[in-house]
Structure formats: C-alpha cells, structure tokens
Image (cartoon, rainbow, N blue to C red; front, side):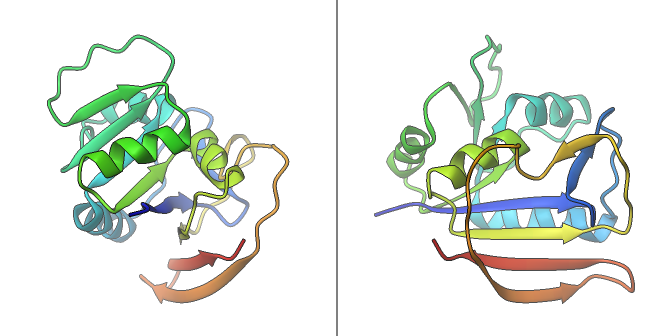
Length: 169
C-alpha cells in the first residue's frame, strides 16, 4: 500500500502561507474546512516552524497521528505524536506502519521536500483575500517542476475559494 500525500495550505493570492511574524490570516470557514479534512485523513505531518506556531496557538496536536519533522530536540509530551528527522520516504513508511493510507503535509519547507521527491498526490489551497510582502512562501525557493490539474474549485464566501489540484508528474 502506498500513502496518498496531500499538501493543504491557506494561501494568499501572491503565494504566501504565513506572515514573517506568524500573524494569522485564515478565515473561520477555511479553518473549519482544514479541520474537516484532517479529521478525515487523521495524519498530520508538520515541520518545526509550523509545530512551534501551532503549539503557541493551542492547535497542536490534532486528532489522529501527528508527525513532527525536526532535527531539534523536542520534549514529546503527547502520545499521538512522533518526532523524527527521517526523510519524506521514511516518514511515509512510518505512516503506513501505523495503518494509515493518507497523510496531510503542512509547512512550506516540508511541502517542498515532499513535492521535490514526487510524493505529493493532491494540493488543496484555500485562497484568502489578503496580500503582504514579507512572509513564508507556499514552496521554498528550490529547483523542481510539477504539472497540476485543477480537480475542483469551491467557493467559501464572496471572497474566498478552495482550489484542489491533482499533481500529474
């Protein structure tokens, strides 16, 4: 069995997923959609920065299996959290060994490492009606090229939309 990998991000029209100061910009509807998706999939793979922000805001861990990818020492006080510095392929083996067939990846650098290795199947982007100059981009500034196919566009409100893409190569 191979694990289906989904990248799910709240994003601005200019490609940002977080401000430089981690100021939140996601709407309640978009956050509810994210929670609905993670409750369905039940595997949340995050990088260190995403983890730090989520813990600070009281949003970590989520229901199901949580995998924190970091090289730093982290005191793991949660029974449903695995802390690892493993490669994306090894992380997916951990997911599979725990009996899951899907996983959601959050965080720009982490998403980049998964997509560069050809491991991402779907990308969900909740496009929020805000732009800013300094922040974290959806994907890191690294060399890769992927073609996408638009599967669905869902309108949350007059100003918000979720785009669902299938990764083709």
